[in-house]
Length: 198
Image (tube, rainbow, N blue to C red):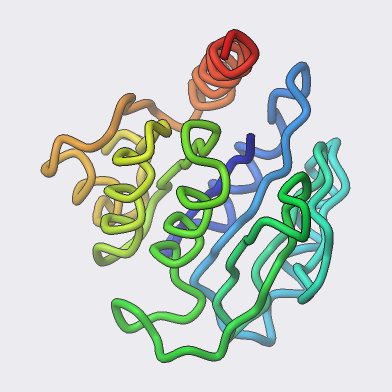
């Protein structure tokens, strides 16, 4: 099981708020795509680490994904997760593929890779942001039995990416940012129980 988060305009503050209260009772890796200039990724990671009880790091190619860690996509490169040899581990890959929806990194690629690697264990969150990045990735997650949460308009700085999900009726839950940690905790408990039962 893994959590993917996509954000654009207004995302750094939203990520800080969410990660400060991120539920830890079900340990999962957290993979973050924030549309941001490459020069600001390091400061963003430091800012998130100050707020977040989990270790936060810039994602590197070949990293074996660990539960209870936050991996932030480096600027200008797509972040993708794959099953390692034997299939028991998730491994990070970085891609210089063309921008998707005009952005690189793109949440669509991260979410799509989570759908393939984790299937029903993929949980994705779309936070404040412009454009429609994340929409096609969420379609892939839903097709594999995963869960999608979208930030509610009331707490968004820019209601673009979450709106695309809501209008396509792809969000399992639409939640304001202050309520997101609690909602995410409930989803992770439910997913963990469902996956354990299979």
